[in-house]
Amino acid sequence: MEKAANDIVAATEPRIEHAVASDREELLAFLLEVFRRNNPKHAPFEEIYPDLFLPNDEVMGRHAIIRDEGRIVSCVGAYPITVQVGSCRVESVGIGQVSTALDHLGRGYMTALLRHQLERAKRDGAVVAWLGGRRDRYSHFGFDNAGFAFEHGIDAHSLGKVDVVRDVSHRPATDEGAVTEEMFAIREGNGQTVIEPLDIYRLQLSRVGFTLEVWTAAMDDGHPDAWALFDSSRRRILEWCGSFDGRLAILSAMCKEGSAWRIETRGDERMLSFLREHCHWCGPTVATLAVLDAPGLLKALAPFVPEGFTPVAKEGPALARELFGPGPGSAHLPFYVPPLFHI
Image 1 (cartoon, one colour):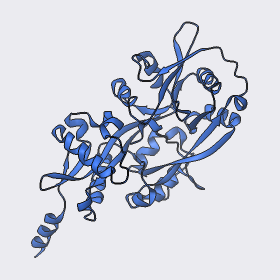
Image 2 (cartoon, helix red, strand yellow; image 1 turned 135 degrees about the vertical axis):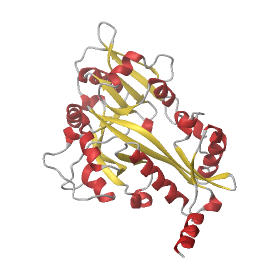
Image 3 (cartoon, helix red, strand yellow; image 1 turned 120 degrees about the horizontal axis):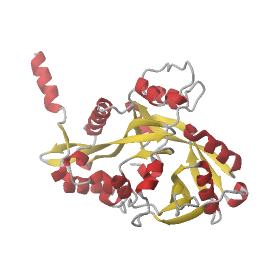
Image 4 (cartoon, one colour; image 1 turned 180 degrees about the vertical axis):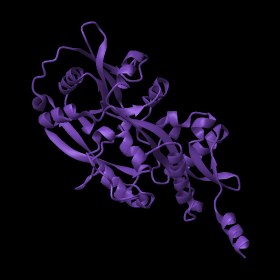
């Protein structure tokens, strides 16, 4: 009887596969069909995320899928990301493209795929997961609104006079040579960003939905000592890196054309303090996070962990809140994924 019962359970559990390169066109068409149910003008996924749908088995294999009679009916994507916060690097995973065909809703496919992807990411070394979805939809997977970054509004009046001598210039981010290898080396040295190879980063700069410019501050010898990625349509600094003075020169030049907005975390205490003192508006912002490996996360962000801190919660949304905040007694660990890398 026990074997028969197990056979019934096994027969009803969906079979999970990882997509391969030959699945690309079908998967793209499936995702667009699902997401256009709520947004008829949704752009094709290969335009929004050209880097996430490269036609090779490794990249396409980040998508876990379920088929019915040979066709894809459900998908959850899990994308490894190395998040840099100050001098720390945190192995993470972004969850996206959560989708099920209309005629297969209610069968538990999303739950099975999401649990599979989170377990897989943990095995692969991710210590935290991030997604852009609703907390109430994903809380039973351990996700919660957590983290405590600050968005600042800066303009020429609030900034005042910044006496920094730099040659500041800007150009469209998709121009050839807009981001050089020399500049990219600066980016990997500090800042709050996602660490990717230069060729993948350049692909990301072509994602639709942004009007991206690269702003550069150069010393007298012509070598850049700071640069920023700026979404000019929203007046937002998506990321920046390099010397403190170089970034101030860039900020000053931007503010001559209007307000500039920047989200900053504890990863750069000096810049956070400066922006707080010179902003005309400041407000908190959170992410939707799940902790996959608390000891690994605390080790990765060790410089920011309060002395003697030990989390009380063992798992679930409470653990995300306790480690990242907000809330009394939280470790308030910094974690920030710039909008360009949102999935």
